[in-house]
Length: 259
Image 1 (cartoon, rainbow, N blue to C red):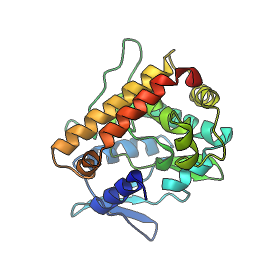
Image 2: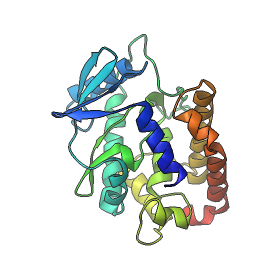
Image 3: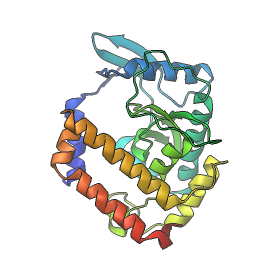
């Protein structure tokens, strides 16, 4: 078991999830009410690609379970261009539907709000749109779950995060051993496929956008760890920030493979 697997175990230990009779139950967070408000807004617009919130009772949130493959199984469903494109289109659909949501006055965000550049526009970012947080059926993304890092921001903030993990913008070894590609993928082509399927993004530098997004994630993890929150405190203690710095260095050194 590698460090990343241990980190996932820590995360599950500190926020135990129970699934029974088609309902997901887990401890609520300060941002749960805000997340539920957005999810209701999205579903009221006909989006069945986000979980249906049921409510919060005695500190436990409940949501309808979405059938399909998620977590580690998600890696396999997004290997194809069809799977990759379906995730990009689903993310775009959610972003579009979130743009006119009015947050409650006491909204609590799971990550800091990110200002949009002039003319860029702001949506509600999922904050963690990796393959593991999509629900998949037959290599098609059908839902996006686990909205713990919800925050306002530009579309590119979520897209850059997704590109890192979907392309992936990682070493050959990681692409095969951690992402389970049978052979090293054409990262540049996969970036182009995702961006085209999402559609109508402003021109951006892939390397700069993704490394900047990683730095934002590092800052959030560091902040939460300093507050004593888990699993971030354990991640930092086990060297996650050093690992992320090495990932940034790899991306910057392999720009020619990616753009």
